[in-house]
Length: 323
Length: 264
Image (cartoon, rainbow over all chains, first blue to last red; front, side, top):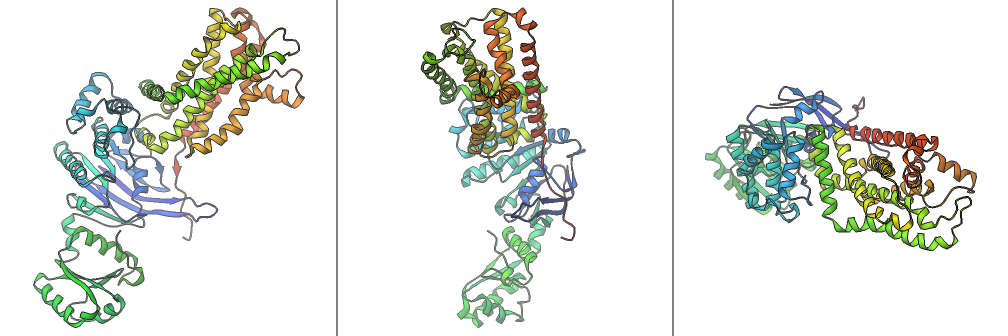
């Protein structure tokens, strides 16, 4: 559905600032009907990629195809296939909910009966039906997000692009929004590409892409990503991580020792051995350990593993902690 | 299709305008107060050579109309920056919408608002003895629309790339306001220093002012036979067209990445 081919973007430098490369020959394919999540630390190039996909920015080089259309050669045709939910609300606060929705319909070439029937269809997915004549500025954050989603659905997009859509929502609104998205994806079979830095959201995705410094570091199903870390992880916090790391190096079972900031991790442990390993580490280095735990890897751990690895293998000062 | 989009965007401008009473009061009130205060204050001492018994209230009246257009245009252009700032613009830009529709929607909406305000001030015209003929009213309307399109399109083109309304205020004070001041709206240029007369002559706003002033004083056949009026009409037309082209060009510009620096 969407095919990104060797996309490269360099922001021009100014007098005070050197030119900055935001995307390095990035290639990524999202198959039709897939729900893909794009994650990465701040400054990883997510937003740049998103701005390019929505046509707000032209890349230095590379190609993007949406459906059968080249995004840069036939932007109108490609855009007609996409629905976009931006991170910052794209609603006119002074207009009512229904006025915003109608205006969006007209922008996508809908009018008359067709527009009305599409509005009914799109509203069926939301909880804003009771608030149609209220000004958008009176809505809660969660409802405003739903209006954005309704707006998007009017044109029956084949591809839904969402940029951090749950930012600023409380946990229950976030859940409601994601459930809605999952139902939509399932019932209407649309392709969804969403950026997010919340890993709980990524668990439900078909595939997760991890971006850092403009490079695509991983792109796989959540299950396969978790397998990269083996089955269990030992997480150790220490008052003196340098000393502890030095002592753990070379010890039996600790060959997969890595460091992320002040945290040490021994990854890819067989479940049968993890408890024994914990006991032996604790016994020998008691004085240096503040806390120690066995953990089943979650996507967040994978993210840490992958993005930390890219900076400096073995950790040290280059090791990075996910925000 | 394009028309429907432009009309929908213009309608949005109108709804926003009506829902912000401060804006209505501000953009109608300021020119009205300027006209009444300056007009009443200057009238006793206003004795321009060769213009007969014209009072300043009457002289300044077309200038006040022009000022209203200018202010309506400026307010509309500030909303360009607000739309970008508040995020509304991104959904328009991401939609399969032609750039002409974006410009036409904004400029059309602004012209609509400006004309509505002028209508309020036009009620006062008979009070200063200015009663245009029916045909004259049509020509006056044409002049008002042309000037409004020119102002708004110019402001739109300037505001498009800006991200702060305070920056736009600076542009307004040092560029747009002087264009109006040096158009003959405030004072007759007869007897003014030569440089000032030259500036006024090349200022397209002066010609737009001619289009607004003349219909009050002459009937349609006279105007259409008058080379000065026709000259002003063509200058104003070209000016409005150029400003529109400038806006279209600005909207068409998309931020682009640079080529990678070799060796990096």
